Length: 286
Ligand code: NAD
Image (cartoon, rainbow, N blue to C red; front, side, top):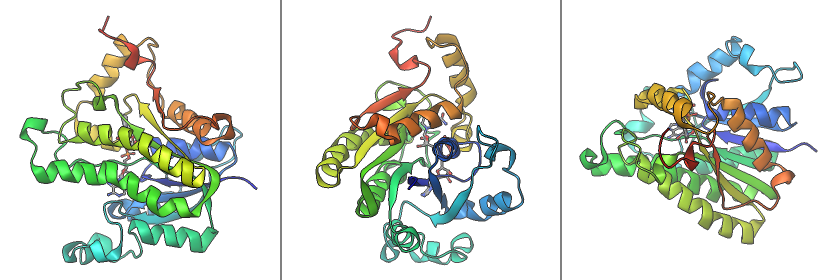
């Protein structure tokens, strides 16, 4: 049987989640995605109308098939935690069962189990504010959407993951080095995500034989990255200063994720793997 993957954080064909889905599909995996509720409508409509068909093409010429799209809001663990204003929000009212617990239950009901879990989502409402100007709420929101969301996904999906399975998240070097402009507590959220990768690798490894790794990716012009506002500068900086002077493609991150999710990486867990043209290894720009 081929592997089955659930990829949380796909809402268009520009981000890392989409590229990871493609690389996993090219390697023979069945693809399920979790799409942020407010983005669900436009994503499903675009899929249906063939807007992504060009970017669905796999190396063998076939089109990536997404078996099912689940609505998901990873800042809520169960229906009891959803506040009234969200429940009654027009963008949420059209969908059901989108808390993390309910999505895991739906996937179990539909497919029984999965082998690969990918977390490719982040949100920091105050990301454009320096840390010194970030509010408590903004900071906690960044941690909730970008770090705890991974803990919660793992907590609810590990019970339906087959032993030997793998989980992957996406992080950024701002967790360990100063990257001015990556504010709002997002640098803190990525530091938490990387630390949790180690602790969760231990817990999920011992208990369920599940591997947990994170990819520290270089800059990509995704929807989320454009919202931060400095992405073109970071891409130029990398082009100028990284050991490999080429633009990073989402596919390169997708391929690394496919490797990490595969038996080829069966002894790799608790790792932060850099897929950034080597920029992390530089001490000074030259
Ligand atoms: P993206 O916009 O494609 O992906 C982010 C996704 O998160 C979106 O689909 C969005 O709808 C979803 N999302 C936001 N809040 C959510 C919530 N509460 N519940 C469910 N989904 C939610 O952008 P991307 O840059 O590909 O981001 C994917 C991951 O890669 C993120 O963790 C990001 O921090 C990381 N990353 C990106 C870069 C970069 O330069 N683009 C670099 C390093 C790491």
